Every structure is written in C-alpha cells, then in structure tokens.
Amino acid sequence: GQNIDQPTEMTATEGAIVQINCTYQTSGFNGLFWYQQHAGEAPTFLSYNVLDGLEEKGRFSSFLSRSKGYSYLLLKELQMKDSASYLCAVRDSNYQLIWGAGTKLIIKP
Amino acid sequence: TAGITQAPTSQILAAGRSMTLRCTQDMRHNAMYWYRQDLGLGLRLIHYSNTAGTTGKGEVPDGYSVSRANTDDFPLTLASAVPSQTSVYFCASSASGGASDTQYFGPGTRLTVL
Image: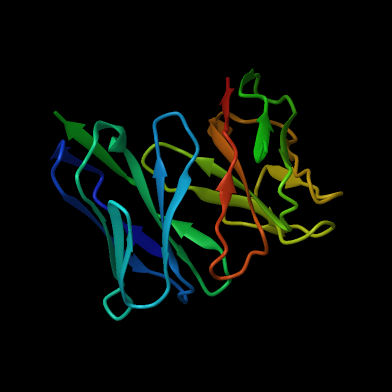
C-alpha cells in the first residue's frame, strides 16, 4: 500500500527553527509537495521537490532524498503566523497526489 | 481573480437526502479534483477530471458522482447521503495534471450528515 508518515504535532518557539519530517512509500514517485493549511482554511502550496537536495524559498526550505523516501520542511525565524498544519504529498506513478495526515505546528511566544 | 469558489460554505443534511456541492474556477485550468478531509487522515481523492468531458475515480469514489460539462465547473453530487460522508470537502484545480503541476484549493465545504 501507499503510505505517507509525518509527526502528528510539533511545538516550537517564536524565532527558532523547526524541521518537519516526512517519509513515504508509494507506487512510483513523480515529486513531493509541501502545503500549509491554517485552521479552517484551504491548503496553500509551499514547495515542490523532484530531485534530491535542498530547495530554499525565503524562510522555508525543503529537502528530498529519493533513495531514503524522505523529505523535510525547514522553517526558520518562526513567526506566530506559522502556526498551522503542514501537509506532505507525493505524486505517484498515476500522477495522483497521496497525502500525509499533516503535522500541526504550534508556535509559542 | 477569484481563483476557485465553492458553495455552500457549510451544510447540514439529513441522511438519505441528495446534495450537490458546487465548484467553479476562473483560471482556465484543465484538471480539477474533489477531496475529502477527515480528522487524523490525509486528504483523500474522491474524483478527478483531467479535462472537460472526462472524469475518473479516486481513492474513495463510492457514494459520489461528478460531471465536467465545461472547463470551469466541477460539481460533486451525493445521491443519498450517509453519516460517514460527514467531512470537509475541498475542490482543487491545476493547469495540466502533470508531474510538477501545483494544485490550488477552494475554501472548502463543511458537510454534516445527520
């Protein structure tokens, strides 16, 4: 079966750095996405990785290792507005997105 | 630009009744999707459409039907609602459905079936 694993919940301090991990087992791999979802709102796109390595976009970076079936999202200089759920999704061999359950990130002052 | 709109925002429905959730996008995207999101689970694909006139089944299609008569609209119909269909429903669209294609989501419809 296909599976995406993420921690259910994480807590971090304002101004700090947090790393959210995602491991996956899917039938085929055509890229990995990270989305942010604030409570009661729609998911919004953060990043896309298809090759191994780190993609940096402002305070957010995303890393991929295809051989390990592993990705992480790194958030720097945390702000209170970063409190949200972060969703990892893998595009499989049928070009459909398989979604993890999401990691709820709580930022404390 | 409105992006993707969904209606209604929320609805309480009696079991056995039918209902259509509406979704409209103004980005001229070819591909559209319907997901449901339940607590503790990832988004699950119900149905999708890669282009107007075609539809396909996702991971959890039973009890739902869709149509894609034109590029902009992708309604989801529950023929006879059951309590297990209580969920938040998101419509999404993407330009082409290709590997790097980003999906853009509507604001969601919160449905409660009693």
